[in-house]
Amino acid sequence: MLRQKQTNELIERLSELDAPVLSVYADINPANPDNKGGAWRIRVKNALKDIEEIQKRTERSPSLYEAVLELLAEERPAARTMALFARQNHLGKTFVERVDLQVGLPVVDLRRGRVEARWGEPYLMPLIHALDEYERTAVLHIDGAGWRFFELYMGEIEERSDIFREFDEEDWKELSDAAEFIRSGRLREKTEPTRAGDSRDPYRKKRMAWLHKLHVRLARLLDKALRALHVDRLVIMGDEDETGPFCNVLPRHLRERIVARIHNPKNEKTPNIADIRARVEPVLAEAERVAEMALLDEISEQPGIRGLAPVLEALQIGRIDTLAVPFDLDAKAWTCPDSGLLSPDPAELRELCDRPEEISLRDHIFALARDYGTRLEFVEGAARERLLREFGGIAGKRRW
Image (tube, rainbow, N blue to C red; front, side):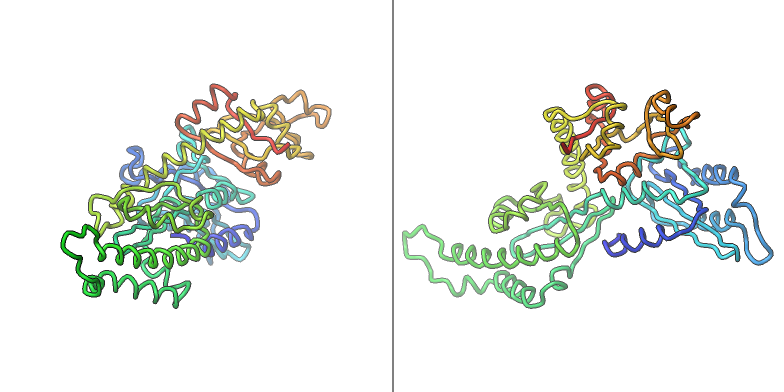
């Protein structure tokens, strides 16, 4: 799993590449029947054969095409999308970086054979967008005086068993000591027996008091962990009578990050990664769909800006805060190369240039959003259908 520091280093490393660069995005999802038997490799090879510039080789080094094919042949854990970047300098020194992602990217188009291959300026915006927009999520599983912490990002999940120890050794020791004391049963030994006919349970009261102390320390360490990991969303897992008291001690800014409180998975005492994933992923997917619908509600109520022509005009004067587009964006626009202005009508640009060039908006939408400080939100499923039906296929929430 990519940590925040690794993500930043990857983007910095790729951004420093000098053109020309080979940029490749491909659907490599093994669950897709069209990729059976590694068929995606054949599609990538066919796409690369059309790029003459990468076929050249010298006596000292193989061609860039051969270097890329060697990297494609590597067997790696199953992923959904591959992003690859390669270049070769005048001395024949080759740089190749392959990034396998557990998420789909909107740049990979079914009509293009699920492969996007370019030679020229590095085409980084789809990857940068994915790394930036996919939110890191933490899952805290609570089981009495025990807890486990899982991190999810870009479709990957990993348990961080020593995460709390990393951030505060003193709090970690107090937390561990309190948990051990609760689990040891010594609380019962220190509790006075109830009098005959007394319905009160002093052991339970003392246990709840100690659990409260444990929850306060756990909340403090959780806060530090989420800040350090740049985690945006939090899922609390466990029985209601255990997660409820814990959530009550969380400060407001942590409660606001909770996207779901869910029950234990089937193997509730010692859930493995598969158990956690099976319970959490549907919840996160539903939260994403709800957020997409909420964005469309905001645009509708504001009212926001709808339709390709009004959106492009507003976007290029910095008026749009958040832009909603379908995951399979398929819109054309025209541009004047010198000015960079875009319009869905070439006639509007003829005062600026004699021959406006037709472009695919999907090729430019990432850079447009970046240049004007606009958040880009790709929508799928029911939100996509609503966007097409009610908003003309593209819409923006206004800044002003």
